[in-house]
Structures are given as C-alpha cells and as structure tokens.
Image 1: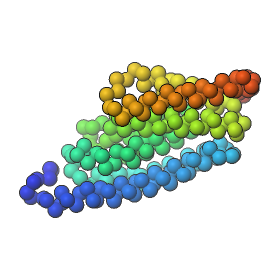
Image 2 (image 1 turned 60 degrees about the horizontal axis):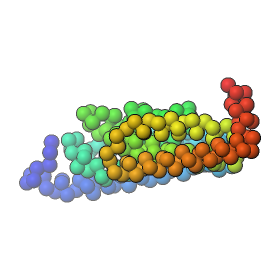
Image 3 (image 1 turned 135 degrees about the vertical axis):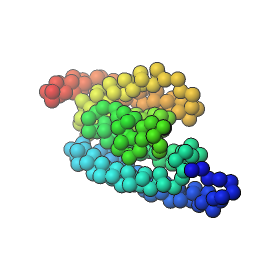
Amino acid sequence: MGLGAGGNGADALLCPQEIRKVVQALEQTAREILTLLQGVHQGGGFQHIPKKCQKAREHFGTVRTQMESLKTKFPADQYYRFHEHWRFVLQRLVFLAAFVVYLESETLVTREAVAEILGIEAERERGFHLDIEDYLSGVLTLASELARLAVNSVTAGDYSRPLRISTFINELDSGFRLLNLKNDSLRKRYDGLKYDVKKIEEVVYDLSIRGLNKEATGGVAGEK
C-alpha cells in the first residue's frame, strides 16, 4: 500500500510526525540503557555487570514494543523513504545491544542476534529490518566504548580485561579490513577504529612495561 499523490495526502503529511514521536520514545529508552551501562566504568562497576546487563535486557523489551509501534507508522515498502528518521537511534541501539552481549560473553553480537533483541528483521525482504550499514556503525561505536573500558579497567585494578579487549578489537579490525566500505560516513567511522586499536595497544604496552601483563595472564589462566 503506497501513499498515492492524490488519495491519501493527509496521511502522508501525518506520517513523518507520527514517526518522530515514536523515534523520540526510542531515543529516551536508548538514553536510559546507556546511563545504566555507563555504570560499568565507575568504581566497582565490574562486580555489577550481570545485574546491569539483565536490567538492560528488560529495557530492550520496551524497545521491541516501540519498534512494533514504529512499523505501523509508514507503508512497509517505504522503509528507505523514512530511514533517516530512525537511522541514528537504530545505530545507537545496535551499539547498546552489542555492548550488553560483549559484557555478558565477550563476543561480537551477530546482525541476526541484534535484530532479534530489537524485535526487527535481519533481512530486507522480510520487512522492517536492520540495515547492514546501521549494524556496522553500531559495532564501530562499541569499539570506542571498549577502548574506554580498557583504560578504566586498569584504574579499577583489572589487568586481564584490557588484554582480552585488545584481542577482540584486533579481530574486529581484521574483519573490517576485509570489507569494501562504500559509505562515506561508515568509512570515517572505520578510521576511528584505528585510533581505538592504538589506544588499547598503548594500555597493553603500559601494562607490559609495569610488569602487570604477567600478573594479568596468570589471573586469566587461574580463572580458566
């Protein structure tokens, strides 16, 4: 059902306004999730990671409800006509979902898993979906957050975490090197990943100079 030029003009005018209302609600929920997860950077925050991740997943229940509402505000075949309205908040939600999954398992969330968390489709053919570039942008934001987490881990006395983050980010960087990024915005975001890699390398090097990487490696071995 397209919006005809003559038959449904009032609905066509209302549509972007209705979309903006839902997007604003999504932005508010995203801010609440971000505020919650930022607590891991604070003193003693690592001890509360499981609880914070559980709470964040509860908030994603609200996101799924809001996504269901968003899907009703425009014709299904006009996703890219209105994509700019929700592109930024969707990328932010991808980052938040990826951060939760990383904190839980220290793995990279798949596009399919993010789509499930958000209550949308992974494939374009199936309706309201997670565009691949929105997924990649969200993952790149995760890299910046993990660079910050590596620094704060040392402050908190957790010397093994930066080593694991370094391994994860280097693997992520290797994956992005295989991609032919044609989107200018995405290419600029990818350039930022190089700085994140360097920042984490500096943290790991500092641990090595201070002899703390041996202690960290021993701690990891002990945990396993």
